[in-house]
Amino acid sequence: MFMGEYQHGLDAKGRLIIPAKFREELGEGAVITRGLDNCLFLFPKDEWFVLEEKLKTLPLTKRDARQFVRFLFSGATECELDKQGRINIPQNLREFASIEKDAVVIGVSSRVEIWSKESWGSYVDVAQESFEEIAENIVDLGI
Image (cartoon, rainbow, N blue to C red; front, side, top):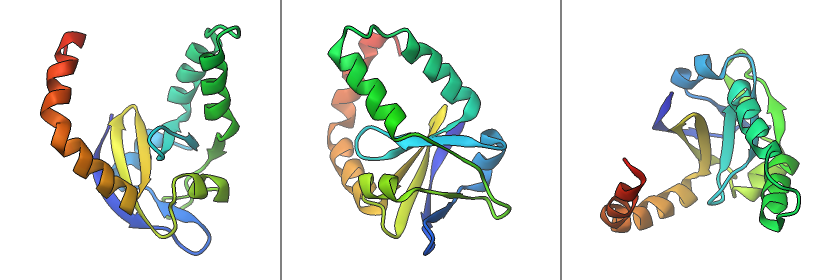
């Protein structure tokens, strides 16, 4: 399980250090793609395959399903950790997430999210204001 928040900088080649606590769970490789809320999702390959199987069951006749699958898969690329524990983030994904230099890497259960430092700060500021309301609303989900 991934959890925690870490701040790292990208090097000139677009490589990002993945926190040591996440490396073992990512294993030999991972899949990085556009995520929601203008961040990037980084999945261990086994989690990506689970998600892929679920997405294959979505009906092609539903516009929202087609759009979501296109969005996720068109931005996806396999990546491997180098000996220093870095991954290369493709330029198109860096642009999507507005990551230029400073990034925040967070663990979110079965995936890792990569945010620009500025976007993460803004997200946290807004989320803190509504955290209690969100908690009240999700109680209906059985949590």
